[in-house]
Image 1 (cartoon, one colour):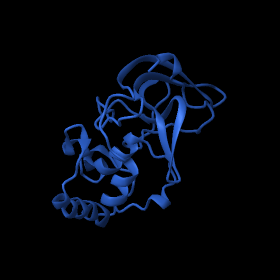
Image 2 (cartoon, rainbow, N blue to C red):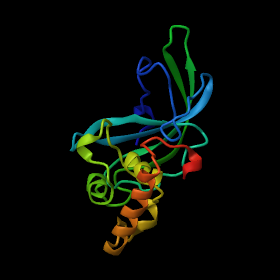
Image 3 (cartoon, rainbow, N blue to C red):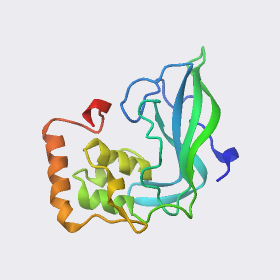
Length: 187
């Protein structure tokens, strides 16, 4: 994975930058963490991107300090950046350093879409987002389930007897009125 190939979000991508973890605004002239990868799923189809690109942004409080379930076959990682809003409303970024990384030949064998389809109540057809390995992990983590606990022998293996427990936890989360957004204290 080449540090030179990590890009930044488009300066005019959004008029407000928010953390993909807690949804709080990321203030101008502050540091943040970008999650980048070269594999995404859009409308149920896998796309291998020609280079690693930023997908999600986290405040320093929500940055997980690891790639919890690195996806075998995907280059992915976290980069510490400083972000600055310009007078015209656009943003500029400066990369400080790559914090963590996992190359295509490292990681765990798992199908992000299959795990969501089988163990989560969110219909994949309703996703308005690009799905990344980190997004799949965060989706479950928001519901109180840490997928990294199911890694065994280089694979993400969820025992069939755990499926009902997982679905029950997600149902409790949904019943409490939570949406895809959350705050760190909800974890």
